Amino acid sequence: MKFRKNITVEKKAHTVKNTIISVKTSNYVLYLGSTYEGKEHDKTILEEDEVRFTEKIEGYVDLAYLNVKIKNMTAILPHKKPKGKELTELQKDENKEKSKIRVGVEHSISGIKRMFTLKYKLRVKKYYQHDQLMLLGCGLHNFRVKNRNQTIIN
Image 1 (cartoon, helix red, strand yellow):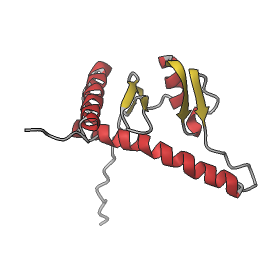
Image 2 (cartoon, rainbow, N blue to C red):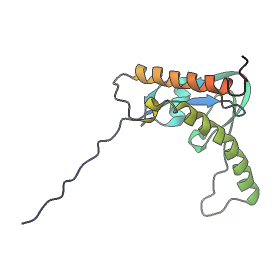
Image 3 (spheres, rainbow, N blue to C red):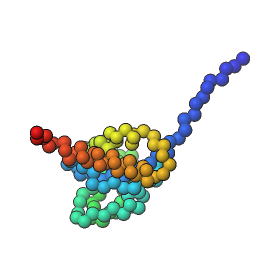
Image 4 (spheres, rainbow, N blue to C red):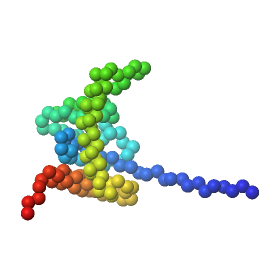
């Protein structure tokens, strides 16, 4: 007699994405985009949101945003490794400097996700509820960043 092992199949999660733009020095969130399904590409989401800036800025982005066009923003990308070749030492050093700046954005995202509701699987059906939770997470993160260095006066 053969015993069959119990096989559990994990259901696929319906993921969602948002575009987040933050200040590189303070990690303050400047812009939160709409919520999209996880299968949408990052560049498509950014272009559909039609982000525009009033003054010229430099945006440190990853290679997912290659050839992105945003009004008044210069996209600064890391150097891509050529096919069959290696990056030069200068290019590697430049990529390290760019990634140090991009780490601040990752810290902003982790600061937003300190609200545990955003970390785990959301079982709400409507996207406006995802938007509201993400907006609340960004607001709490900005409040924390703004009040981080202020001293309490009695």
